[in-house]
Image (cartoon, rainbow, N blue to C red; front, side):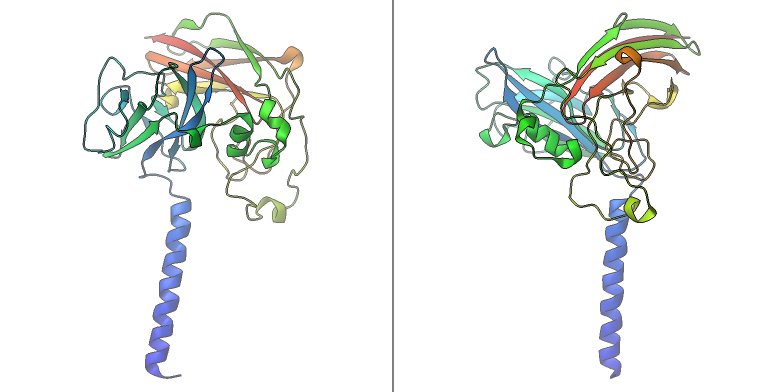
Length: 320
């Protein structure tokens, strides 16, 4: 082999290996990346108004963020394309808070909250601006026909029912969820706060299944079969911190993750070998939370059948 040919081959191999390693690194970056808001779509409400769905993607696998509502985390209602230029500041305190989170978990957190807009919303946009790691990202909520969704679309996007495209998912009923007790609580630092909820899946669809549970290392580490991580069906419930420093709150028992962590044994419905626990007796989930730091926290309870979600918030004032 000629020296020039060998050199060219070595350069090619080095380049391919470098690209491969870089691609692998991009898939598993632990910290340093940004959080991007996401507009998930809309559907019509029965009263003629419209419901817009939002979520986010934290590109990190471990780093979490606390971004309070304000100039770095705000909503604005504007005319079409008015905030396409990211250098423009659209902050207005009167519209900034539309129920978005201020704590951002790792990875994909889809269909996390909704905003209702009036029947005459027309071509306006609800724009969510997030600034993290010094960079601005925006999501543009509009009523463009291409963004119209239904429960089957939601199920498909979250990999519900093993990624099923069953047409019956279009009429899937989300779980019922009821917080037992007040939605506003006060507790002292270090004092356990009891949390109790009732959750039920009224149509028992999609039905719980153990199909596809990995049982060997080969199955656990097999390459994904689609670009969307899938999870099994079955009623489940978890608490998370929606607003406030998550590392200052401790739940007992440990809560199943509500975000798409696909790493092995990650305590996530999307994590192999996944197993959705059976509901507790009478479908009542009891737990406690203890806070290590005073302040205002919003806890979010999420009931899911694996395809659709129902949320309830509990606001907690933690005193010294």
